[in-house]
Length: 444
Image (cartoon, rainbow, N blue to C red; front, top):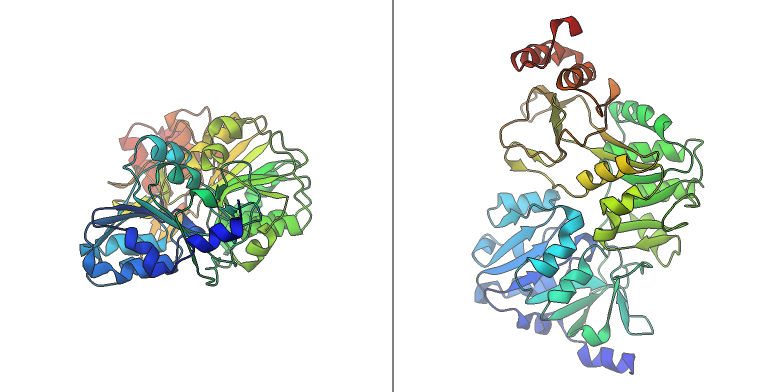
């Protein structure tokens, strides 16, 4: 096949490509960094001639053009598999919804459960000499989407890195219906400076990490601070197997701490399902044989994770209760993010030989009215989601200490968790624990 000739025959304008979308269609934008730009803008321009177009995406890095108009919800409905701040804004506007998932199961959802996909449109790096388009920073579940799509449009962006993959990380030009070109700069994800609380939590976690450990870091300030502290530590021979690949891993690798030589799977490779970060991450991941994208039903599979010795999982939480239930995705009924892979990594790390999972958070938060509230609660607030059930949680860390809940009874859990709550709230928590019969006055 003459791939260059085939490319030219399928090359078109964004405006022409999106004409395939009809009212009532299901359209998929794939995931995070590979959401389309020019195609999204062209679809938004057709707003007034379309109704009930349902669009799926997730971890959205910029406001979709289809969501910007005041009456956008009369024409498009946004469905997010995992909410970023942008997704929350779309939902708040009244034209979007969250799809609860275990992220590791998402490829199977597409293959077995979701409605047919009429059109998929997503960004890719330039085609290789074999006619393949790489899924770049979002291998995740893209192959599963394509397996159900009736019409496939790719948006070629030369700024996207080409990332080597394990499997299911490319699509050939023969399976593509239309090609457009749009070399927009990549959206970068910044990170807030580490707070003193972040540093205190990191100082408790890093000594628990052995040489040769395999790392999974969640998104957020605390996991990033742990990553920075690892980069500055004496740790060596570390590996990476993670859901989201972030700048922190690049920093650890630059410090010479990562070689993957102790990994019991994918030795020498840093494996991830999707990535977002700064320009340094994009440049580091581009055609780097040390970095490998993979479908999320591989990266997040509990059975896969459990086979990797000394697996260390570090994630954030919104709040938790003194029974040990972790909420990492909502503030009451107000949705914040999603389950993602937290539960899978918590379970997989505990099953790993020498593995540990850490849920970290500040002991308090301050609401918009300036009220300081404890993140450790008697019971979760009404409507809050249980991301990790109490039976699965291992280490919990605040700036006041670290506890391992495995093997503890309800009163032992209450005592341990109250002990790492902010001192201003401990007596109140004790009183509530007494009412629920999970505290003995002798504990105090």
